[in-house]
Amino acid sequence: MSSMAEILEGKRVLICAGSGGVGKTTTSAAIAAGMAARGKKVAVLTIDPAKRLADSLGLPELGNTERQVDPALFEEAGVEQNGGELWAMMLDPKATFDEVVHQHAPDEETRERILSNRIYQQLSSALAGSQEYMAMEKLYELWASDRYDLLVLDTPPSQHALDFLDAPQRLLQFIEGKAIKVFMAPTGFAAKVAGRGAGVAFSVLKKITGVDLLQDLAEFFQAFSGMVGGFQERAKKVNELLADPQSMFLIVCGPQGDPVEQAIDFHAKLADRKLPFGGAVVNKVHYADPGNAATVRAALDDALDDDLAERVAANFDDYSALAERDGRSIERLEGDMGADCVIQVPYLDDDVHDLAGLMEVNRYLFATGAAERAEIATSA
Image (cartoon, rainbow, N blue to C red; front, side):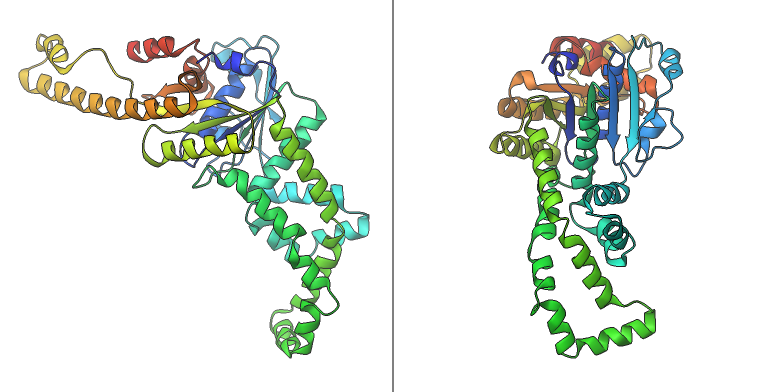
């Protein structure tokens, strides 16, 4: 596979997708740092409860607006930025949802009614798909601002990579679906609640809790119903951005089990939806070593006693078995996606917790091909 820099040539949006726990955050940050070191102004966006991204970039915290990574950190890591800039932000779905309401509300009174409504305050945080939808909203907002050469989106953590593509549609189905129409109809839900005695139950609930749930529901749907068109139009623009030739999806996965299967399924779904696919990054790969246990034992005989040398050789055998397993998974991915589409990043000795660690990952991401990556891994 070509260098990541070559793959991203002419691209303005990179979406790193994959199931949870496969290294999306590290990969996203490493790519963003690598492109900043190549003279680009880059922003990386993430939803990461562990806040690993902020730690690795030397930022005390991230918020719903971009913060620039101190250029001094690049200098300390021995990296020339060549005029580039690295910015980062931690996506806050609730804050982004509020911003969307600000944009689409027809007037200030409606906006305030929605933002202060207790039903909205709960739904904006809990609706299925809200994280994914708001990640796309913020991505579109920054893209439209035209302030960056490249935007890198670290998609929200999920059990299945496909959730990223499916969840926003589920949210839109709620916003534009029957819930609002049924509730607002003169003979709909609101009228039935009042006419069947349920209003008594709501009254009792109000006395106990001080919350007029029925009134909150009515006010929420009345205020929100006028914004459906704005959401639909914005969703259309976001979907157009995802399919734009300047955008690209990068699949991130581990080298075994479910992550590989999900990566293959996600690749198929991207093809079905005609969304631009750039490649796959496989993290924590055990690279095969051209040596074998016998040669390892011979090399260690002069330095170690027999027992320790035997244990080292056995450990090498175990590693070789893992490398063979990973190799079979890589072959399967390459058979599905193409041999030139898969970048392997090895299982590193140390956790990536700073900019220097990200640049170590970049040695593999931005290498010129598989042979160079294997040489780096086996000579480390």
